[in-house]
Length: 180
Image 1 (cartoon, rainbow, N blue to C red):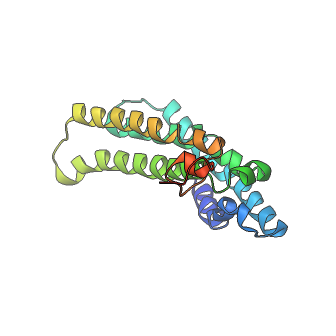
Image 2 (image 1 turned 90 degrees about the vertical axis):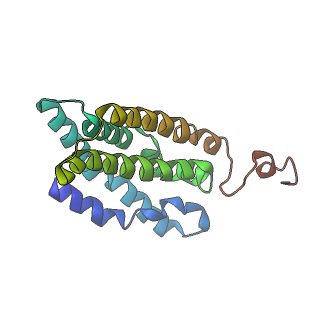
């Protein structure tokens, strides 16, 4: 797990440009970033399978922190966009589209906020000595999960349909209007 974490930290510095295939970096740079995007899936897979095996082998109590941990595992392993970002023709076609925006937000919100909420719900009672409402925590989890998926899962669709980033109306992006 430590080696996988270090590997992700090291390789992630070489992955960012898979969002920039359409800016004219050249074939060598594109190949390097595609390779780095493919390679980072190995330590990421190690971590995800380790988390799932830990859950499988343990006595699971679905308190609020555990719900957020499961939500984190699901959001980290369920999306298709990381695999698609390592396929150069597919990523080239979707570069500068809403698909990239959806992928970015899926990683940031799903990968960071789920883990932060899990840590908060776990450590707050230990640090302060005050218990939090389990009912409100579960409401928070379910509203967050539903809102997260309704927001970011469906963001991939306009990107697949060709809607570019930084355009506030689809009609303006397709040349159907003047953008006003």
